[in-house]
Length: 187
Length: 394
Image (cartoon, one colour):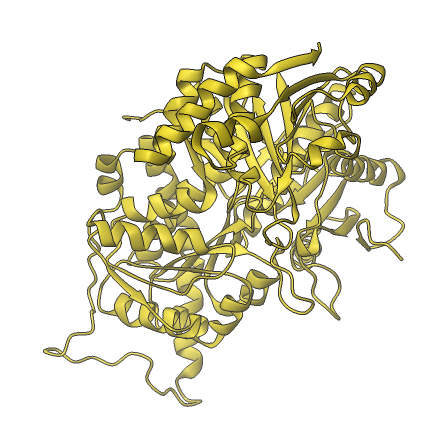
């Protein structure tokens, strides 16, 4: 088993942290995983990519991911044009978008392109829950819920290693909402 | 052997954690991307009281390495980390450190040199420091970055050696990758590296002189002793890795290898690319191609005898360099290998691939192409050219 994930978003949204947390959760779960960022100019707002590899065998390869099994777009504006971010995605691969899901055109496109499509309006739930726009943790929680790669308890443990106090509390709220509200539009 | 569980560590974090477990006395470092996290973590360990060390926040890398030399000669266990421009700025003191026989542990997060400005992976920084008399070790993954840190101090501080040692980790590819590692326990670390004992520490009550002037009458004798200390590194290294295997269960050697026993075609690399080439080699082995891969762990002193044992059985070799010796015959590792081949009477074709400069990614299908190239070299009894710059646009 080898699962390769590519993350898209913008500088400042926690794309790299999302990928980092995923790898840590999988390692805590007893799997092998590797996270690595693609650092370009580190400017807030600039497009950023990050990568996660997950396997039940030790991972020895050290190069980028070009044919991912999964693409996670955490920026809500980029999520409106998923066609631009799925290059290389395997047939039958999963797309996770930070999107309300009301766009029939995207659903049609995903279906005809042979991709699975999952959406979570991370922007809306984070504004409602914590009055801030946090995308990476809810998008990751949504993915874990759908793909069942690890238990949400494991994910919460990893969050507790990274955050504490009020910040941890806010993130846990987002995890709960995200896992309840993630929707699979094309399965 | 007591082991703790597999934990997630970023490369830089793993190195800092190892340095803490090595119980160093003095850290003098200046932050530079992508080694920054090492220095940040160590300063936190010292500030929290988790590590009882003097942390000297210097104003430049030149001062960092200078402080390390002084502290080392006073008998302290000493650590620093840098890369790229920072290592270049240290350069004159790198010679002083080794020639004064000051053991120092240093992590180099191998990064390209200006210009053009680029912060990504390349081995030019350490290759510029190749002839400074330091021992240079290369890590292939995060676990090795962690493990080699312990081994580096064990070798450096041995009274038969007393030389500085660098552990090289690929910029970003290892420094910023999260991978699972199995650390050793603090108890095992303490047993492996007991507090340093040094016979000739600088001490105001018993003054001695280091780095004295040596005129033409004596200079070569100093340098000969220095060379002989490097010649003793292999025996000390072999003991150090054996003892480390006892506590970690992980075996280190002058190189890592895959299927070299019956291979005809060999690809030699340094650093994190080893795993990529090995993964590609597994596929080609399944097709019946007799390819082998070597990832050199010890680059200096060059383990000539061990290389000869392997190269003798090969019919062609491709050497991959993530650096170039401008105006020379090719990459630095390649020129070493063709030297080893020639003076040991091994007449096989050797080819140099210069790749991945400035962090250009080296993909799995490219690794496969290089292995096929090596295999073609066997079949055809030679290569069309000596050196290729891999994947460069014209």
